[in-house]
Image 1 (cartoon, rainbow, N blue to C red):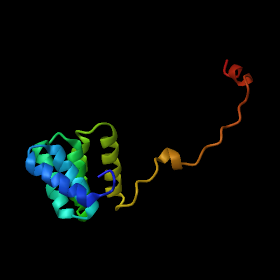
Image 2: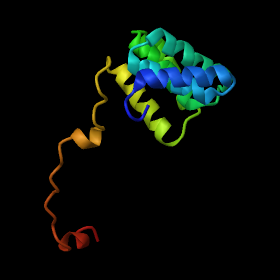
Image 3: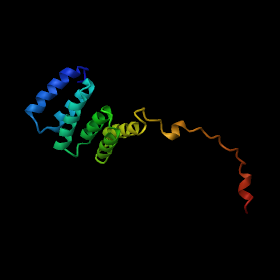
Image 4: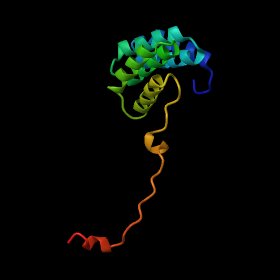
Length: 136
């Protein structure tokens, strides 16, 4: 998979899934490889099997959402990403958050945070220390 040989990865993860059907990681990896190959329906089936085997595995929900979004079902993809966010931590949480934002933005990359795009305010000139005594 890491070498970009996604068809070979699909074959390897299909074999692994047959040999260890109850291993959710094989199904998650198979779904990722199938997505890279454009095998969207099989990717969705593999991702759903991953989630069925281990519902607490947030990356499985990410895979379901990715497949649904690729199939054009933004509503169901959004629900899958939200389910995953309830369970996620670290980099998977960031990936789910980004995918969810892209779903809400009609597939466009998520915008930069408001703080990064907001105009910078110029500081007001100070009056020095003399204004501290004006209130006494």
